[in-house]
Image 1 (cartoon, helix red, strand yellow):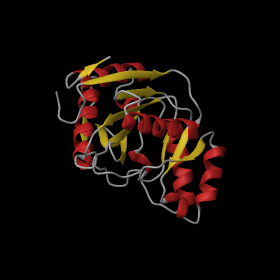
Image 2 (cartoon, rainbow, N blue to C red):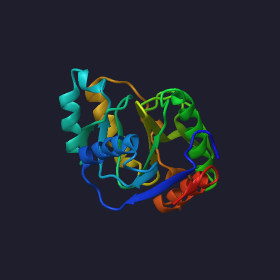
Image 3 (spheres, helix red, strand yellow):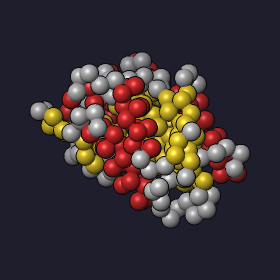
Length: 235
């Protein structure tokens, strides 16, 4: 078993959207319950409604209200997440994986988790034939050192963004895997980043399906669970 993971993780497949803000807040509620031991360490997997999740820094930019409006015009609900980073967009063609785990010294392994889970998701995508690796792509949206990208004839595209929230006694590691239908995501991000006054390269936004057309969200979910099962027991 990896030192990053509990010996057993409960798998919760959330079949219905709660709403953009409610889905983000529910993860925090679960984190509080995991911390106290009222909830076992768990994986929560769901397909979100169309959402633009803004970072805390985005809310302080002059164009934030306009960016919220642009999100709605594209059919995406604007929401603000507690974790860091810049705006990211997702919809039902993406898979959100929330890993919640109790840990006495949750802060100690915070940075190492980004590398570990980046490798895990890249491995899961490679098992489906995607040429996936970990690292920041110049010009990507919500840039991060441990983004997971896929390589194809048109270059590298961001496929997985990760964020983490650490509290005393527990942590939440949340990942968004873009699998299907990248065009609406690229479009809403182009509009919202322009409203925020942030530069980025729209060519870096894509989906696994852009590289392997037959891939589905179900395929990626199965691959992620298989990658997890190599490190810990799932129930």
